[in-house]
Image (cartoon, rainbow, N blue to C red):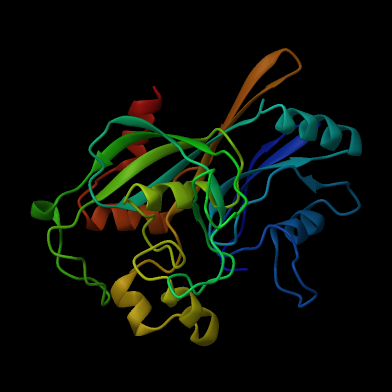
Length: 275
């Protein structure tokens, strides 16, 4: 495992864990690759553990874990009723001008075409799509916490070539619907893809090349960050008459990336905003 998960909270009914990037939440094939679920089973041998929410392999942050079948059922029902609120942090390309906004646009699978060589890639598709592709409503809310600009940019580091005049922004996000890749799709749709995103970033062919060859000098030059800069920062939900909040600090790779673009002390920025 690239780095160890962090146990944020240990409750009689559930656990909250911070998943590091590059770690699978759940086994996808019997190849022995380390997973968050496997780590939990080793740390709590013989106990019931079930992931209430899952994160993509590259996404870091908070994961809620039920400690009994009854709790798993209860939290699952709360998830369906959207009573578990999840907030994310993302570093995105470009300066986001709006301090706050809502992206309300249906999402569906794009399908293979000359413009889209990636089977799993999704995108914003109109509900009256002439190709008849299936869509589902999707709504994302964002808050801009900070941004850099071209005057603050530093020289190229580790081979990454920042486009001239480019900036990055630090956003707080809430997905009001739970569509696959929703945050990444919506941010790319408004012209601010997540930094390091191989599928929805500047060149989707880099994803296919990554699958075939792994991380290359071209990936480093174009993407810079070896994973998409998306972090599940906060969970909020009601439990036994109270309102609970759990947070996972911004991981080191995203802190370093923010600093190289002169977004200094992002943890303090996030704390001031939340406060």
